[in-house]
Image (tube, rainbow, N blue to C red; front, side, top):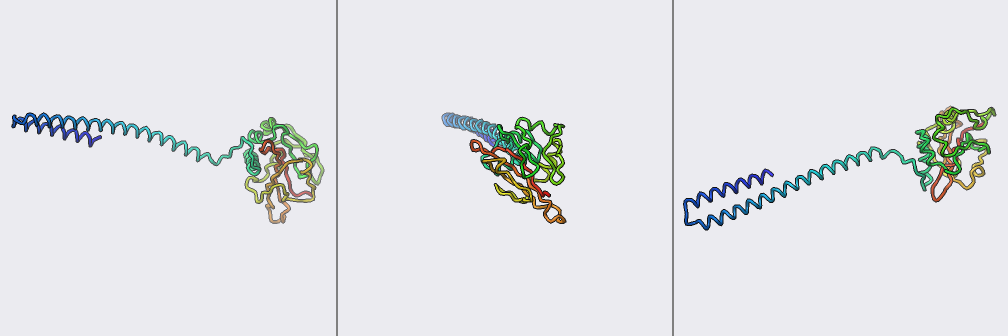
Length: 254
């Protein structure tokens, strides 16, 4: 803009000079008129170009504002990109299992409900042998469980045979997310990694399903691997999507 204003000033000076020259030479009136007209035309062109440049600068300011806004949105999306989308079942079994484990890690029972079989609910078993009377909760009931103070009977303790009477929160801490299963040593599909002396009846307890095992081979060297632990998630497939139907804990039994 400043360059154009300078040019306009130069044209004005040129016009004055031409007028002075004409004053000294009256016989060149025609040339003076022509020069004056050309100077005015040039000044008009420069003025138009200056207006056009001003409009371009305004457009650039608007574009810069839009670009900065988009940059902020992209930065926000990148910042939140690590958060898993847990509200939709997946057509990929590993993704479905990972989403469930992420929900369990954060104790997001609302997300877990969205990933659970909407008709059959989810069955909880503290051991690899799933008793016929194992507790089952419908998806709609899951979100209320963390604050539920009801003492449920989840089965019997291996070894002692004592009744396993626990609130959901206590059971969750001991037999659901007792280790960091989101970062396991081994992940397997439809094949048990951790085995002990307890018989598995997964195929009969959950017919026509698939399962994913998140396994740790042990934690304390003094136990020589006898403190291994697994979280097994059982899924059934409906309309091409995998839905959670079982949460099984597995570990060393006597």
